[in-house]
Image 1 (tube, helix red, strand yellow):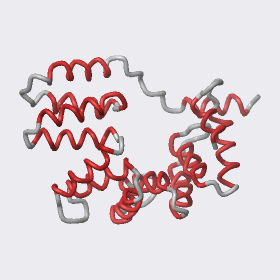
Image 2 (cartoon, helix red, strand yellow; image 1 turned 90 degrees about the horizontal axis):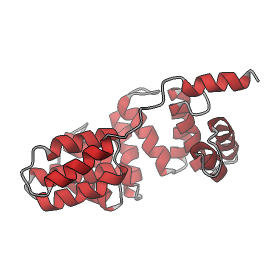
Image 3 (cartoon, rainbow, N blue to C red; image 1 turned 90 degrees about the vertical axis):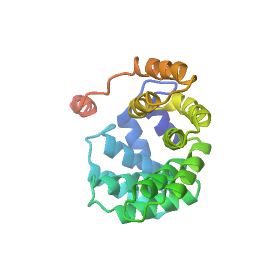
Image 4 (cartoon, rainbow, N blue to C red; image 1 turned 30 degrees about the horizontal axis):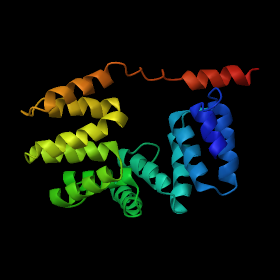
Amino acid sequence: MMFGQMLLDGSDQPADPIRALCWFAIAADAGHMPAMNMLGRCHEKGWGTEADPGRAAVCYRRAADEGDDWGRYNLANMLLRGRGVVRDRREAWRLFHEAATSGHAKSMNLVGRFLEEGWDRERDPAVARAWYRRSAEAGDYRGRHNLATALAEDGHHDEALDWWRQALPDATPDILQAMVQALARIDHAGVAPLLLAVRQRLAPMPAPVRPGFWRARFRRLSRG
């Protein structure tokens, strides 16, 4: 599992998603559920193989059924969007909630989203914010952003800005863009420097790898 992750990340050696996929498969076949989850990620994202959301969902399901929280989270995301599986928000909620109650920070944030948006259940903004806080305190940048947004809506700007600052280092472009929009609506002395920092983080963000990049590489290598 660890060697596969090193090959995927390019830690201490050039990245090699194809070999990483092989190592994840070996560990997964031996019953290592975190590796089964990572095998699902490879199939979902097309790392070292052609993207296959349906096959990814099978791997996530196997990991989730054995109690792996990342497997639960990733399968729930696919169920929420109907990607590779039939859309099923009720089952997505169950998986997110199971992972959240066992301490999975990203799932805590999604439980909050379900409750805030009222997806297949009664809206409960107060409980949603409690879950956002749990997610934020556990280190999830999306939880931190959502908590900050809720706090700002209630006029608690100082605390909101603090959570946005904590979200900034790990935030992805979609969250950074959401932060720009939220900060632009706030009249507070601390907004300007934070807004500048967010825009500076957005500026050098690399473009995503073009579709089919790893597929083309796999085909070249497979031909020798």
